[in-house]
Length: 73
Image (spheres, rainbow, N blue to C red):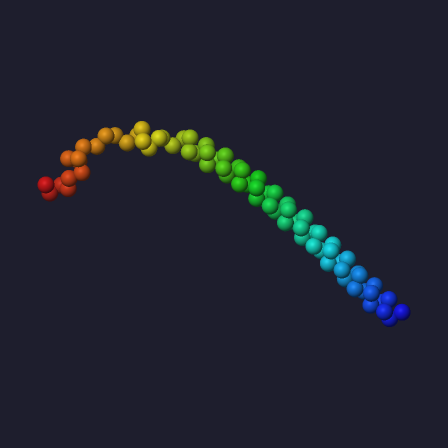
């Protein structure tokens, strides 16, 4: 009976570890899912902000080289 008790205890320990691993996996999956949702929201917000910014190439006026000279010249 002692050998059977040892086997049963080991089997119970393995089942407990499997349940804990399954719970942890479910928690991690939920965390990854929520993070992905947040990433998608942030990407949409970033794209909205980019569209609101003026085009830097169109906004920059043509500059003369004389404008580049230091004031002491």
